[in-house]
Image 1 (tube, rainbow, N blue to C red):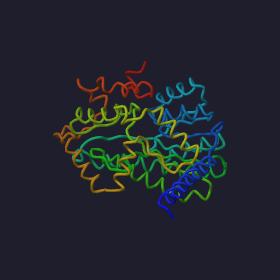
Image 2 (image 1 turned 30 degrees about the vertical axis):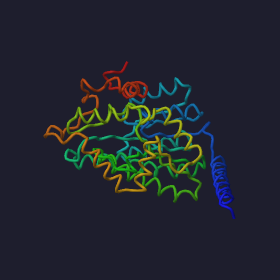
Image 3 (image 1 turned 90 degrees about the horizontal axis):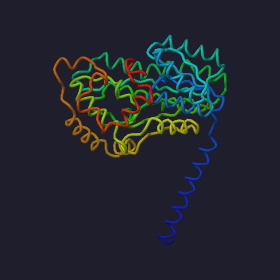
Image 4 (image 1 turned 30 degrees about the horizontal axis):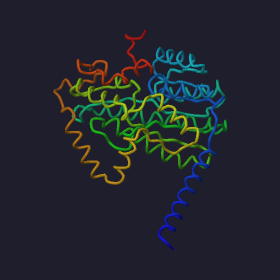
Length: 346
């Protein structure tokens, strides 16, 4: 057999495999019109962007978050786009509240078709300033909360027999541990493992579990992140990193891609080329990735004095250098995605 003939055969097989995969994906597609979509952490940021996108598809969106005033603003936003929405105040760290929320939804709506676990917190700073309580807080939010929500929702979703989609919003930090984000990365790794394991175990019942690992996003959430150490310098590097076009993705675009992945029951979605490259690089050569991250850590702010043990929000950590023209798109996202502090609300 000639070499050119062999290459042609291999190429043909490759094209056939891609075509078959696309056909299978298309067969898994569902419609969201009339579906009940529950979003924990849906009052602002990516959660709000997802609510808008599902509402445009004709779904009835149920938003669950802690702040009732924030939920009211989110509901008005979704309704202004023609969406149907219900809000429920719920603390993702409280198992009882989560279970009561699911029970109420089941009573009021009769079913849950899509469950989205999006609630999150971000703690930024050197390891020296992170307390055990920071790790516990992150785990309760990113791991235990989603686990409690899934366990409570599964019986409802099984009986209803609807779309049976679960979407867990993890992070690139749940694939590659990033310096100065230890509580966040550790808890997101836990969520990634939970989500991937659930997909395998629930597949035989017709469930599709999608693990979403976004890279840098312009959601406006950096202002509501909590910073330790040299507060202004920590906020500066983190906010600028999330603001640069080409390296970060807008909340609206991320939401469209996540909804599409949910529609087709994709197992995983890694957002942004930079995040995809990081995952591939870490898989191919963990040692090289480790050295690169160690170098990055050297460029980040050093630990501060005891004042750095106190957490401050991004709003409390601005300086004359940040925000700036470089962060314009990310700053605009705070208004678009309900991330402004209460004192700044119109």
